[in-house]
Image 1: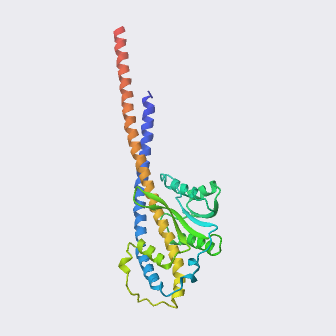
Image 2: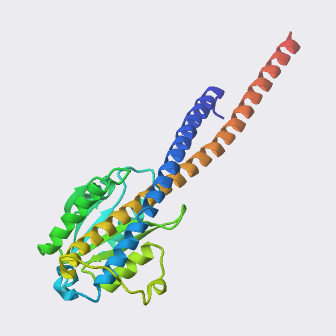
Image 3: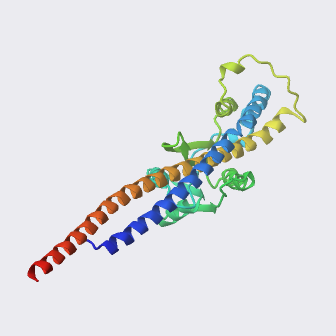
Length: 292
């Protein structure tokens, strides 16, 4: 049995660990709530964009826009969204498992230090590494979106896809791969935007559009589709941040609970050791008196 001094040191160490994990749990919970609110704040923007595209859908020739032109896929372009820090449970590992399942040629633009380290370690083709703050400024995400759009238009990659941990609830984050470019059709884009805005397709059936576009519908569509791609990437990065903070909160809560359980076991062991030491001292005193 360990000495009481050693057990006291372990108890102190576990208490410190529990205090740290509890603080990290609270911080992650606060950040998760803010990230969820930021994700929901984008709904009115998605609704307005869906209305504008719906008004444009019957006035333009879709095949004219390069985002809507189908082409042979030789190299895929994937935006991988991971965390900068660890202590988030299996969040990043689940994403990396999905990356290893991709057998076709692909080039990666990575948001997050953990993802960049994985791509470099596994000798995959890394186009660029980006860093985005916890508050997810749109200007930083737009840089990523514009970079990948440029790679697509120049023919460096033949698709633009985003791989991120989709937030389902506090306990579940699902690694998801979403194709962004080329777009299938304007109508599918409208459906996606309305889904993000929490609206049903039936609610908009038969509604006439009174919008007037200047200088013309084709020019407006040409400006709107890049905005849609930027908005989709921004929304998924917000979603990934909510998933990261949620996973970290759960991991820290589990660590805190384990520390509490270990502390109870150590306290019991310490009490047993102290009782054994006291009993031994009493026996020694009694034996000394008996021999005297």
